[in-house]
Image (cartoon, helix red, strand yellow):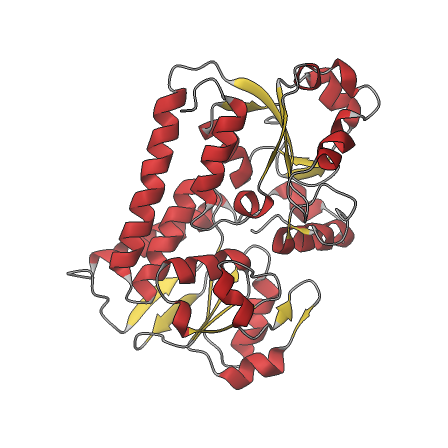
Length: 342
């Protein structure tokens, strides 16, 4: 988590936590249903992420023929050593991104329950819901399920992880800060679940999409981008969303700021972005979403507004650090550089 976030008030932290879990919304309900967008958005200290990657790589080298050898010990993003004596088959996810990972790895039938905001894939609709970190978790029901492992986001749910561990549950927390981290996290979960082949297939497809975008923008002049993934808020370095913009051939106009922050509209006008990205509301991208930005006082002078380069993108894909994050990368690339898209 960045220094900026550590100094933020409890109220702002709660706001951003909620924002991440539910997905972004730039419409009238931005302060409620979209309060949980930043999934998956704060990050652990770089040193902690480095330690996690090193430990994970060492564990992977101990495996052979894509079969996990148990007992297996991995260090998660909370800094906890987590040991699995056997292949876990009773799974719970308390964060939408990890829910998507579990299903992408073919472990959907082993998921016992999820948080209230896990809504993809469609099969999650039939699963028991356990509440959320923002609105409150049904810990008693969770304990009654006796899962082999509970998956959480270590940046946003470290307190939850400790509470559940105190109750005797096994918890694994990841906290990707970049697309590379997302891929490594998926590989690690595949290792834990003995689903390494599925993880390899998922990450291979993700890597191909990254390479496709990199090739497309290799010789392109970066365009200045303002991203508003929640009404009135933006981000700078230290967040995976900034990584998406850079990879997609953009230059975040607030790259000199760290973490998430409330935007001064005058600064957006002064920095004059060529492209403005916003995330869709509950009803998808609508003209109302767009007009909420283009009609702000003074925004008519911004190049992006004058040239009709104010573009909505899918909120869940952009905010959840799971397998669909590379789909969001392509969507952002096509928004920034439509002239290069096929």
